[in-house]
Image (cartoon, rainbow, N blue to C red; front, side, top):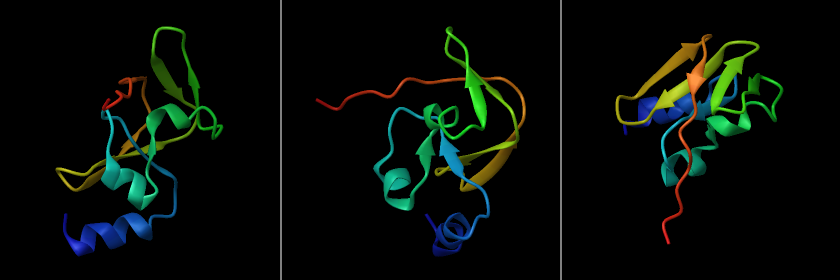
Amino acid sequence: MTKAFEEQIKNFPHPLFYNTTGSPIAYKLGIRHLSAAPLSGLATLSNVGHIYPKAPIYLVDLEAQTIEEIGDCIKLIRLQSES
């Protein structure tokens, strides 16, 4: 990941989320898993694993080094334990 993208993440004015199965890099940068969006009041969670944003949600793709604004339904990917 480039330093420029890391700075963009650190200076982004909205909460950032990711939707992969676990990312130590995201954790270090303060990017929360998408499952935290309902607790932040930004979305509602359905009982079938979909998140419905109440406001735009910003998803980070660390591999592509992009931040995407999402306003539509998102299928939540469950985190996995590395044990």
